[in-house]
Length: 457
Image (cartoon, rainbow, N blue to C red; front, side, top):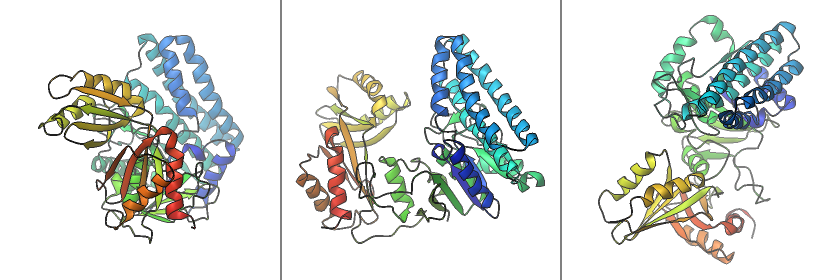
């Protein structure tokens, strides 16, 4: 069984959607499909939610824009009158539900996290209806399935949820037990599930990758294809390193670390549902469907120069928590973690010393993080500083921790480029070494590492 996921980059316009549909139609036996929203629609929905909080007059124009995008695609891409009519009616029914939700937000003048998640989910709901209609019109009978209606069960976290995999597997088996449904290509909505209280819960931006992995788990698939508009994982971001090359293979751990530390190819949690299972994950290029792409395998391999990719993340901020005994005081890290967790703030990394605890957090959460921790000053914590102009740079590869002299090569190459390293973490992961540099040095550091490990001397 194969699961194929198509992201927003594959659903930009009629040309890219037609290409995705042709790839699915050619697949034998029939696959299961998971879709993101049409490109730009999630941002449009969230912007409409923001506007609806201020005035109910903003709801109509927002709905009209979303309707226009999907109706135009359906009317131009679905030739059969019966299928087109059914698809348009299904789109209108979904838009009517969205409209009621937005008016509710407008009347209360407040978008709760649950309401925001519910509104954002309509991008995937509309995309699944649209793609199922297009596939059916091409002679490939397809049925759209909404994640909350088929029991993609999650925990109680609304905006960064975790799937209850075993419950979802039971629920999905019950949904697909009818012969008619098993014969059609299922087009599942990505990005969201449903909490025990019946609320929509999202998996974060690009969370459709994670949804697709959950579907692969539930269906017992042996292959998950993630279709993108890029060739696959690269040795570095080609926008900053023109000499970057495509990677043929990575291990689960390498791909997870690259995704966590800044590579935008996969959602960082994509591989969680697949650990312990022999599922091959392949990143495929929409415009080069016959290219092998990048295969992500459960087991890794060590290349001669060890490092397989260099990545960076400029969306982080550094919090420095000072005090003469913060590194020694029992429970202090737990206290810090609880204060931030209570505000749904994720800590990317912690590096400690006797007098300072250093936290990496999302830059968008930096102000709230600083305010939460400043309230704890006095006693062990003397002061809290925030540094936002920083970049995390990571070198990733199997065998990195066990290779003699590798750290010297990494930091010597960066030093030769005139880049000062502010902080280092090595050993926390067996496949990654990362360090912090000033924001202005991001490209210099990445290019220096790429020259050292990938470019001819």
